[in-house]
Every structure is written in C-alpha cells, then in structure tokens.
Length: 124
Image (tube, rainbow, N blue to C red):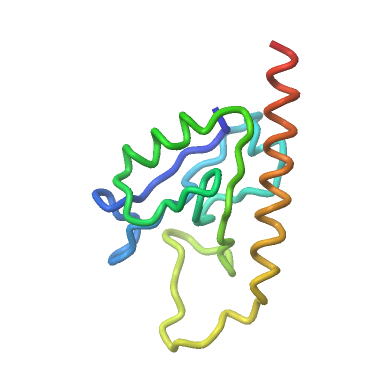
C-alpha cells in the first residue's frame, strides 16, 4: 500500500458537515513515512486526477487500492498542528498561504510517491 490510513467520506464524516477524505495515520516505514511530506490531518483532494469529493469511505479506499504503480496525490495541508480534526476558519478570510504553497508540495509528494513505489516494486 501507500503507507497511510484514511478517514472521512459521505457516510463516515471525520468533521461535521465535511465529507472530505483525511490522512488519519502514517504507517511507520511505509512509502508515505519514508517520503516524509504527507502528514496526519492532511486532506486528500484527488488521487490520480480523480476528485474524492462526495465519495463514500469504502469507495475512497477502493480508489486508493486500485491506484496502480504511478500514484499522484493532490493534498491540502492543514495550516496549524491541532489535536483532533482539522479546523476551518469561519470568517471567510484566506488562511494566508498562496495556492502554490499547497499545490507545489502536493505535486512534489506525488512525484516522490511514484519514485518510492517504483523502487519498492524493483526490490520485489
């Protein structure tokens, strides 16, 4: 696998009124752990270009399982470390980070994940 667990979905909301998919746990020595960029609490927006919006939890899990060797993740990083679910700013203002600060690490994560998965498969 990719080395992390997820929570969320339309049928198992991690946060009230939010059916997004979130990273709940990074598995030690897994691909995501070794890469070091994905963090617990990160929101996964898309897998291989497929939007995760409005999916049931089990459908999201199947999407990850069937992602293949070349996996691309689009993530949204939480802005501050917190205990519990990721919080939302309720005042309608921007979080202060430009969009590139979220998309560039997501793209870099995707490239690294592909590289790690390909190396892992070569060792098998």
